[in-house]
Length: 482
Image 1 (cartoon, one colour):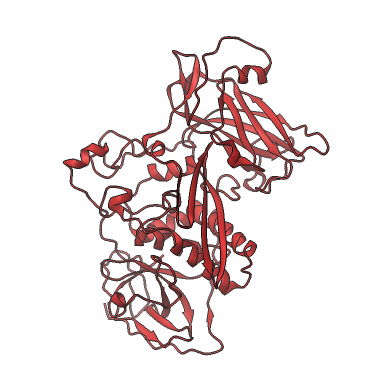
Image 2 (cartoon, one colour):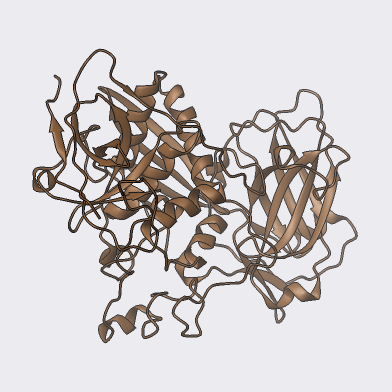
């Protein structure tokens, strides 16, 4: 393959970033200010290493010799395979996915311008649904997180009590809507049963509590399950509603039927149980019923901002269970096809505006600063392996990742609408960053198919578009089209 030369870019008043239109994949449910999509009913738990322990129960899901933390004392770590390019630059500009990549030429630099309570055993039978639920119920974990949010306050094998806000910060309109509660296999697997109730909200009320009764099927007694609450248009079933008409508003923690106690009990997979609250310099994670409430604080253009959001625990566990044996560009492609990264891109775009960043260049810098604000966490600390690529929801919940994790996240965010930039992954020796297509910008860029991609560092703070650490500025690198 011929090596690609890198022309020197010029700095001028017409400097701009070039956008490309991209249709974002849609989730099975409309997810606003949250993370994750529903899986298909036929989705099966993944056992990546074939050791008989599914990934969500396995401490080391890519090593058949390691299923518990203690096994690491005698096991050696394994990593993902070396990535190859999804498009190899050629004179004809024709992608060649099967050809091993060859490093492009040395980059060109242009001058820079200036605690849980389990339910008691059931002791009575009551035909009143709310009383039946209350007599054998789990209460929401950390309900204070849900101030001005919809949430499931109590639940049992008889159903769920859902608190609905007429002016929720989530932005959901509860007028002329029906409430649907589904009992599904955790995380977001097959649906066992579903019930719907019409809402009756008193005039002037700021909130209401609706009780939805459930007949717990015997098929659900042998597995880990959770409740999912959603709003649908009045008189419309969940099956007939379109994705835009469905608002997923709340989920519970996973639980299991306890036949001996005739009651339900919380039952988190080990991977999920290991994650609790955490806080540090500029970040915070709080565990609550069904979600992780996360906040990142940083600065852009001299102004401080805060980015609060929450991630459903089920979405996190779906990512943990997913096959991780893919190349790095394929992680970006999967994130975009699943709809997760596009949904989160929309959230960050709204947060940028709410923090006063309205110009397109400002919003891009805000997204870059957000990703750079995430702590650098080596794989051997976060997963027990030297090289383990994570999906973006894992990086968010884990409050950080290594260079490939944050690069995958940033490439997916900026390539998704509402941003829609042409992005690549740039891989110098022993490192990974991203490139954004632009013309006449200052800084360092690589060229692929006659398009200039300006380097963006994702680890550490303060790196702008075109800025590159000294240790990589004279290196050749693989450029991966995503």
